[in-house]
Amino acid sequence: MNDLKELQQQAREVRRQFPSRIYFSVPGAKHYDTCYYKNQPRSFVNISVTGRECACRCDHCQGRLLATMEGVLTPRDMRRLVDRLLEQGGRGILVSGGADRNGEVPLFPYIEVIKYAKQMGLKVLVHTGLVRKETAAALKEAGVDQVLLDVIGDETTIRRVYHLDRTPDDYLASLLCCRQEGLKLAPHVVIGLHYGRVLGEARALEMIRQAEPETLVLVILTPGLGTAMAEVAPPPLEEVARVIARARILHPVTPLTLGCARPAGLYKRQVEITAVDCGVNGIAYPDEATVAYALNQGLEIRFSEECCSLIAGEAGLS
Image 1: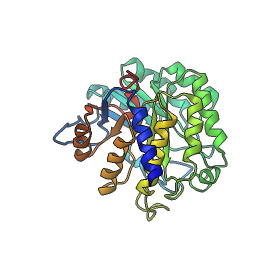
Image 2 (image 1 turned 60 degrees about the horizontal axis):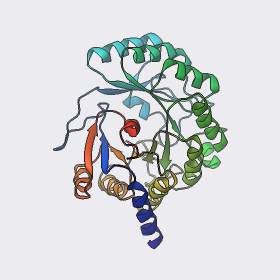
Image 3 (image 1 turned 90 degrees about the vertical axis):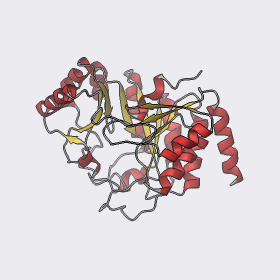
């Protein structure tokens, strides 16, 4: 425990070089209404280019996350959806989808629609899965604002959870490929991905450092109902705190956020307070108690209806 307290103190020292404010991201893909802020529906929409289909069927999701997105199956479908969002005052989209057996999201057929969405003034984020050079080059040419990529640092986790014949080096290669093409990066690390165990997170954070991302996003294992992990307990709060603190220390000049995925209820509130104590720059969909705590810690609060990965431009070093 003393080791954890020392880590958190070191993390807070690193945090002091950033402005004393925290960003709370509440994109309209999910309803948010508290005494502090109310978001607008569909201001930022998540799109799956594979509908509900995913070849990987990862043990913690098995395609259920895709059901929460706007599903499209053809570029024409996506073009119509983009036009509809524009009419409704939408501000941005996150383009994602199920992965194939290589761990890649089939984005190529949608490149022209992605380019169109950018030309029409939408912010466009792309959650890619593993990335080849030609995909990275096409996304750069289309003008995407940011690439999101889950990074896994343990080969056993990749095989058992994601059902992929891949290695951590493949994830590092994808990061570096995107960086070489000049894409802005917001890599994600899922804490406790290995059935609630903290296993490859430290290696993932080291790999990410090599790519010098614009933002680093941490999320926490949140298994879907009916999945192979439905009964798996989330990682212990103390272990989560260690990962967050180490991420802050290891990435001293990179904005650090706690993303959307984390278990609900008391665990959610506790982990958000822990994240504030470990020096994060942003939190997605915070509990009211977390906002109050941040204010009590002397932090200026700012709400945004964009994804938490987009805080980099405002949360930079003072």
